Image (tube, rainbow, N blue to C red; front, side, top):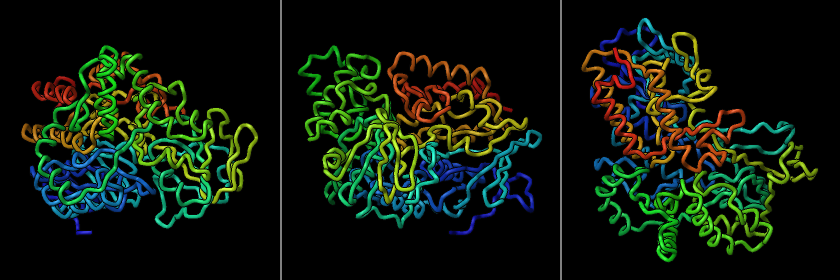
Length: 549
């Protein structure tokens, strides 16, 4: 790694502790945007990344089949300086290609010189007298900064369920997010616990090569067709030619992607027109059926039921075994369509048809423990013998990456303690009691319902402008008010109360983590509306919901 440049600023330097204007924690899209643009504006800044390179979730998630669920060319930075010389080989790039992309971005922007890898931040303490944050890393290094940007992402803190006798199992036990490069499933007997996006992707890779595969499913995934394809030179050139228009469109839409919801009501649209819309979105592939659907399907039971019915009629005929068919595509929806993030599949249901693939419903027979060779369910059956058990159990999304760090304010209160009974985070970016700290992709922001790269840019722009305002006005402290935090939560709840999300336990509302308070942790009104609140804050001199001094 290129040596880190010494910070150049007017902050007092310690012989032991390097001091900066801003420390950025996390090296994905959000962190890279902050590092680049703060540095360009003359701030002294360093980026600290826990893994060995840039990429965020794509640096950590290396399991077989891991790939992007936003299509090319939207999942990249929209600066022409970067996209003009880069081509994705697939419509939905895999994890290896994403790491290559981030290496390319690094080579173009020379980011490594102001970054430190394999540097996991484990503690952050605010010094009120000095108005400074002191950060500590796992290897004992310390860093100091006026401001901290936590760009730790949502899919970086794995969730491992507490299952009795897990340590009794003698085979390979691995979480998808911690996959070892030397772990090969070929010819092995494999179990997968979970049916979220990572499980769907691993199943597709495992089924064709394993001796046998057993999938333990609690809730079926209402998975959508990815419509994956490799891109030839002509297709890559066509994508590049439309990139300026795509980038502009992404800045305007609800989900920061290059299409938007149909403004009509699905239930009020004539049946033939409605089915034509469904068919077009289905054939378009990807998230179009989710994020380009009728605008009322997440609020209207009847439109939602019609949407699920269309999905069911598309998928169920693909499954040959009637028992598997009912488990994978139940007659009655397991939850409102779209209330959980759908996976994108290539051949998931074809693989589930294979005779070497078994499906166990943990809703009917929950897992009660591990054995030396396998898994025991509540009906007394011991499933095994497994060479490998894969925990495709997801993440403590939204808050986990933040609360896993011992972030402590001047009064000794940790962020973990503050949010233990629920999150209140103004603009999904700041929270009262923790001055000079700001979150990219934070809880109560629109991050989960937005294309990640565009969201990093749009959130990033308003945050960098905010830091510029503070510096220009000689201000060294900011904090949200308790009232603003509470009002933001109330605003989110007002929308959630009219929607169908609260009928599902999902990572959107913390329902995937036992003991975590269930509350809507996403901003549901879309990125453009979200940015209007930032504009209002800016026009107030950042005193509408913030205090600055």
